[in-house]
Image 1 (cartoon, rainbow, N blue to C red):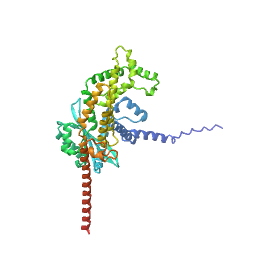
Image 2 (cartoon, helix red, strand yellow; image 1 turned 90 degrees about the horizontal axis):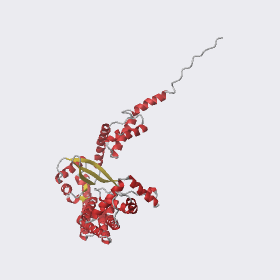
Image 3 (tube, rainbow, N blue to C red; image 1 turned 135 degrees about the vertical axis):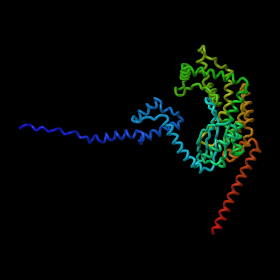
Image 4 (cartoon, rainbow, N blue to C red; image 1 turned 180 degrees about the horizontal axis):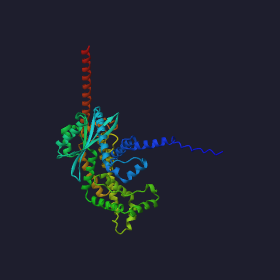
Length: 434
């Protein structure tokens, strides 16, 4: 008979249905309003805020390429969207933090004022420090534009308004750290109390170093000589490579080779690092610039001795700057001991070159001028006495130590009186209830 022709069985689509469904689900998840879209956008906003990146970073070709590799279906939003996202996040978090501040008993604050050069606009930055479960917490609560002349009265008003907006009672402010500008000192003393101002120790060290160097005749010429050599090497790649090669030839591993360092005008300690690095590399630098016609002349043997002595003189100041700039622990109790130890170091320091010797004299004079009254700052003195590592070991002025000890006794007495009054009041209330 005739063959039976069977109609082909249509292919089943049931196995592909989940894949199609998943594909649409994926597209939805990465579209605006989808869970993955929101999660990635939040992460980008976090990246911009925490790493202090500009908003236009999201429009960069490299950034978009990175996101495309990680999440091909995600479309990077524009900078305005990210800005709005961060603003919204700020509103939410600031309310949470303000509520948190209600439960904090004591605050220390740090503030500074600077001027943005391009627009000639003044800004005030404010950071709060407090203890949470015995751990130091620091939060920058804002940068605020100053619209009037930076008088002490105006600064005090601005600080009061800012703290009020964050639920911080001025009575709970234990200390205020600022630079030594007359307007800042006036603002804190008149607004928060004369005994609550602490001069920024790192800023004071900076002034000591700058003034001592400025007043030392002949030193700046040698520093400029070093700076010119460093600039010459840094701007020429062949010199940088040659410097590296010379070190490797001297049995220094590639990973441990050093580069010259150039100082930054606003940070005095960068000058110390520049000189110290130059001293370390001097034999190699001498070799590589000797053959260059357009290179600055190398320092003489006498000048090298001078900068070595200068580095010795600057070393105690650098150590104090580094210690005072610590961010993760409280340093107030170390100020008096650090100054005391530095004075002892300078008294014992023996210098051969006359220029470095003059620098040493100028440093000690500037330290006396700027640090001479620090032991009379009650917050500094009391903190030092209460630190079991230091107690009264580093006080140079017995009367300052005695005043601080009297202050501690009074604080203890006042605390006992307040506790006794509170107990008596509580007992009286209980008796009345009966």
